[in-house]
Length: 340
Length: 271
Image (tube, rainbow over all chains, first blue to last red):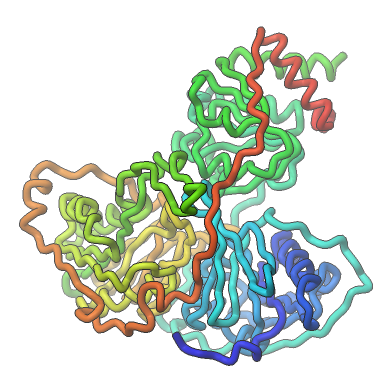
């Protein structure tokens, strides 16, 4: 491995997504985690937010209000739409400019892809989907899941810089907004993008954002699995979600059955990680990647008619019963209560 | 355009059905795989299926690459039985302990050594590590355009251009790309087939070549543990802290119990 002067890499750089009206929630969460890491570090540390996009200068202020000391950004019409090769050039240029010790990137489609490519170019380490970041005896430790979250492992990056991590949205908490916190801005140029003459962008389709309650924000989340048994029966869960104001998610098998069409409804380490006060699983057997996606729920209740279902060992309350005897009755009781 | 040449990267992984049984031994701190058999990584199977479909319409030639221990031969034979033309197994004791960077480097060396390809296909992620890193890193090392979370690929054999649909954070983009190109694919790409009996018989006649680090002229500093900037520290089980109380009784009693819990947590009055 190439030996580098590690001490020339300083500070924490956070790379997140700029949406049309401002930074994505996950971006602010990572700034919050960067601030907590900063508090653990002895030397003075600067937190840089790295932004790529077009016409976004007016929307950068929230980055300062949530912990950034510095914003290094590229505002270029060629970055108006995400394209992997251009965003890779952009983040690479920012990292070369800032030379951070630590890089935190959102583990979204875009963030994960760009961070991977940049880490390859920098020949440095990238921990995937970190769930915890800490310093132990001066050593930076990134805790990552393996085997769909059944096992956790510490990842170290002793010999190269920057030390990079991707983190899923919802994993960490943003700081309360502090409008007195300000910082410096630095705009740099987008370098030439090598593959521009080989890649033609034909179309951009943005998904219409659903009006349903967001899984990551809801206090009450219901998850349905293969045990529901049919798309006609799925509506019971929709009805329960409606009368309780819960967010409704699903497992991979339910998605594969097309009972649910939005892939972003899948709860688990390979989908959405949820942290509600209450998680109610219905007809879910309890595959590792699913149960690890609800680890941080305050209380979990599982309904499954198979007494040997794994889900019961991951539930605070288990109900071994046909869900059809429970859910419709529950809906009735809640509806009656509201009417009465 | 000549016959398209397709490379497919395949990772043998422990069967995800056994993940519940995988634990860390409390005394040795080592991983206990719980007798999990080794199978082809699910998304790589989807990538291979896409390659087979391109082969059917365009007479393409498929070479499968895998960096794996030699006990993964069954997975590679299966790739041949499904219809691949050739398998290149990258196998060397010095490849052991590779993180994503060293893995991408080794695959890049193996592919470059073997020939030129119009497209490289692989799953966007593996079920065991699940880092979603290798596709982007391999593309970077091969120095070709690369896309991950690709949901469709087609090739216009006249122009040699690929039409690619790939997910991004707020939707999908469609691109037209002059190859060579690398695609990390998702489940939407194709529906995997089962091996055909005739192909199973023929698979042992097809070439399964093993190459070591010398054969692919790999830099010894960039492979295996030595070439991995990340180092694994302690591993541990994620312990369940749930109470595991089974609620008994009539549906009426059980639903009342659920309502009590909802009330206690303050999630009942939201609607």
